[in-house]
Amino acid sequence: MGNKEENREKEKMQDDRIEEMGQITLEENDNKYKIHLLSVIGEIEGHECLSSNSKSTKYEHVLPQLASIEDNKDIDGLLVLINTVGGDVEAGLAISEMIASLSIPTVSLVLGGSHSIGVPLATSTDYSFIVPTATMMIHPVRMNGTVIGVRQSYDYFKRIQDRIVSFIINHSNIKEEDLLRFMLDTETLTRDVGSILVGKEAVDAGSINEIGGIKEALQKLYDMIENNQN
Image (cartoon, rainbow, N blue to C red; front, side, top):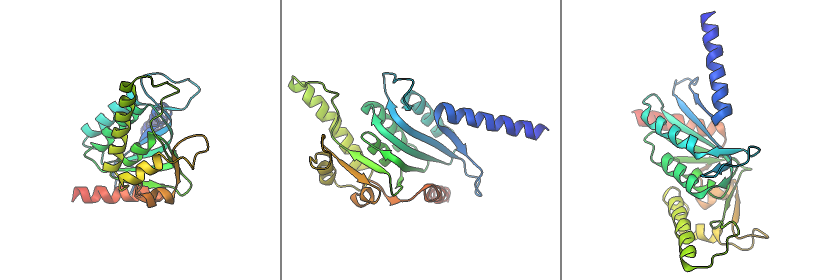
């Protein structure tokens, strides 16, 4: 009875953790590696709270958890599942920088989409996968309808965009000229500037390492952990 009660309590805690934060520790694999699973879904929430009806990833939840992962010697690797429309640029970059600075092996898997600030998030890990039907939308920094009336405002947005571009090219195989071409394309999106890369197109462009799903992502992470421990 004791073991059954402990298992039920453990399952409840895992269910609550998934429901509240979209996170769980995977540890039932043959190698007994402890993999922290982080889900980046919906819109990435920054300093302003989104509607309660919106699916969101809250950076004030994610940042402390990433710090805890780095401080936990029992966690062997991080798997990031991504299906986001983008969101707050500063929050997204902060999460990306945290992931990129982790000392444990990290792998990302793009599922439905990794749009806007989701692009640097997808490239922030040591290795990245995308399923064949997933999309990545690359476009300039949004200004939310704000009229740029002074040169200082323009320079500010330009510097934000430069930070995003620098991060992506430093954490993926895409060339800067190709990234800027995708970002400033005027022919793909009928009412906007930018590009949409679907599955293999993202791999061919160099923004993602490989086509694959959860099986390939986990196996890659296991291999990286094993190499890291040898």
